[in-house]
Image 1 (cartoon, rainbow, N blue to C red):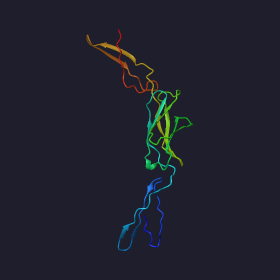
Image 2 (image 1 turned 45 degrees about the vertical axis):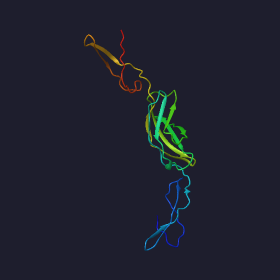
Image 3 (image 1 turned 90 degrees about the vertical axis):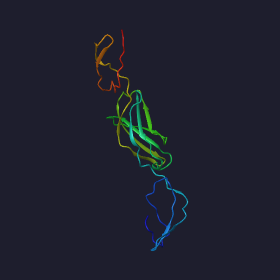
Image 4 (image 1 turned 120 degrees about the vertical axis):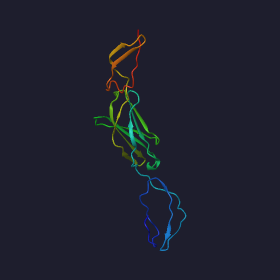
Length: 195
């Protein structure tokens, strides 16, 4: 704080956080030193303002077929800047011009799931998450790419062959599935025995 001339009896405090309770004390000083502080003022809450801090760690993915799962790190209370705080979720298929917008009114929320049967498995979406309160909409995060949920693999491994190793063992081999939108991320294979 600035040192205020001894004939001045009021001051304006600037750069305070919106919608936060503050209390103040005044201290007198002279060439000898600084005196005792006054008793604290009554608590005073600054006015609300549009939130300016966007959610961080926006990502997502996973979920079931026909789902787009979007996640973020919630904004802390001291950065919400007012009552009626919530999140604005915007997404569009990669390459599309039109954004879909959804609102999540829960302060603690960190996830939004969009379900639509027309979403193809592992489709890329551009996603951004913003904030709002009763004062208006605030900042949006930067755009990130999130993939819709996977489906079970629609293709079978190819070139399956078997080699007899002993009376009790057979060695199997096959052509692994390459990653694509029809196979997704193959986590493993299941071998079935038939005779």
